[in-house]
Image (cartoon, rainbow, N blue to C red):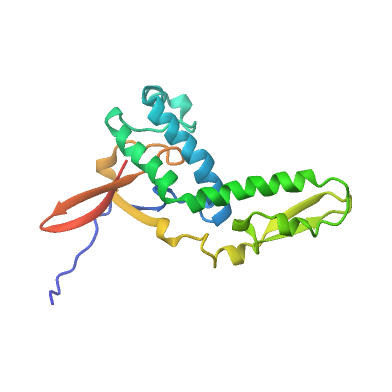
Length: 200
């Protein structure tokens, strides 16, 4: 076994990802992540695929940084389309969890007579059953809370969607706004080794 020391350059960086997007606080809890992926991520990617030119132009305007404009090139439309199809076709359980939240919200809002809320448990959409507590305040307004410890031990917490990508600061130039631009896989052959990396 070789005793040679191997180290990373000082300019190397790592970023955590959840389903190709920067892993910020809204992408960690299962329900919030499902809502964000099903609504925001899907909307941004769909918009880019439909009208990449607008996104490309907007990404060049500093005042629009932070808006829902995906920062990618025209030749990357197919890459974004692939990520969108992956979300729609391979992560159907994530989309179903998001839809279940919408259904439960409607059920809760429809209960306005102040009577018992017990029956709402039976009407709770299947993906959320066993993971919520339905409550009623002193003014008889119903609501619910997520039991997150249970969600983190359920099928809804998808560790397989978590990853890390790395790069060199000197190679990336200006970093795209991380909350509106995903990264996607890139396969590199280096000295005979196949390395999974990521690119924007």
